[in-house]
Image (cartoon, rainbow, N blue to C red):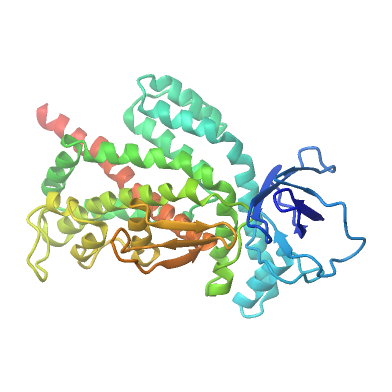
Length: 428
């Protein structure tokens, strides 16, 4: 269709690809005046589709055939990166995505189709989950409340299972993590979480149990692990605030060599300023999760969670000292680490710029410009990433936080099932 911006009254040609999401809110900046216009597609009464418009309207000059290039052209689709530019008949976002996958797979069309189907299947699950975001938030809040029976009841409703009657802490935790596993299946890489869940208990079993017990005591008496788990759980419901712009970022899972042009593709729904703080908060949590990784690493290598390897400038005297370091400084104290931290996926400069509000966003180009050295009297040099690249960074950071949450889960189970039982037997 051709739409007319109600701000500048200029026309833009649009090709809108249908997602399987029932309600499809699409935003883009008018190519003429850069005002944000919105088109919402409602497919809940299929096969009929209803369009509503905000800051725009259907133009009175609708084309009788293919667009002729008189107006600027935009491709729009919630599920795939899209490009602004010349109109190519038939080259819809879906067909363009298949070509990108095929090229990434060395011309293997069959593999490209399989990956496209997997992308669609994840989004189908996401379509079933996003309406339950408020329900998920209530379940997580109940986990921290006093009424544990109500938590088990609401969690069972979310999971579609029979209610777990046990109120033992290990069973409450098992319910909680089943809820998280179901709710965030479309966002995470299951194999990574399974590897941590299976291998970390083996590593803990091989560590001196007396020293490991001291580590557990430190984590729980200070409240560090409890507070860290709580902060992680506060992040999870916020991920559904970014559910729509995450869709094209998920597609990039299948493009091994992501060309700058592809990562600079457009997102058909944007709300950068509403999402930037999630990125900052996730990286702050990862900075604290690394303290757990370092403590286990010290136990594994040197038998003492406070014992760090001597490096240039000397060794740290305690895990407390590490917790006071910045995120970028913490990495160098993880010598020959048991956990493969994806440092390259964490844009620390972007996080710092967001934290100090040294950041700009151009809705017309979907360019995020950040100033790592901002806040000085002299003008600072900026760095730019596309909104799609930012969403990709946010997705990878969330996956890292989620993977590290398996460490929290494992330490909780160790305390409940091994440490506490041994303490009870000693008292007896």
